[in-house]
Structures are given as C-alpha cells and as structure tokens.
Length: 68
View 1: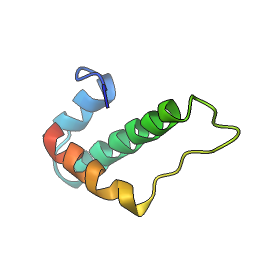
View 2: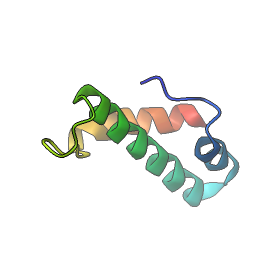
View 3: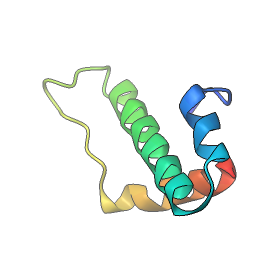
C-alpha cells in the first residue's frame, strides 16, 4: 500500500500505550485501507463508495502489528 512510514498519525499511534494505542493503530490502518480502495477505484467515491469489510480485518490487523 505505499503509505508513508513517518506520518504523524502513525507515529502518534506507536507512542500511545495499551488499548488506546491499538485502537488508534487500527483507525490509522482503516483509513489507509480506504485510501487504497479509493486509489484502486480511480478515486471515484461517488460511483462506488469504498467500505471496510470482514475481509479487510486480517490485513489491517497484520499492518497494525507491524506498526509496533
């Protein structure tokens, strides 16, 4: 997914401990996943709105673990 490694939200998520940090990591990953889906759709959100589905949970969790 080509996301920047030094994004402010990602660095904040790594600094916050405990459950709040994990929730923030997943929020960041959800946003990046939506951006990836928008890009794959040619940034046409009006014709086909991107959604997070159950199939996105695995990749998002894996990416959140890698953020640690």
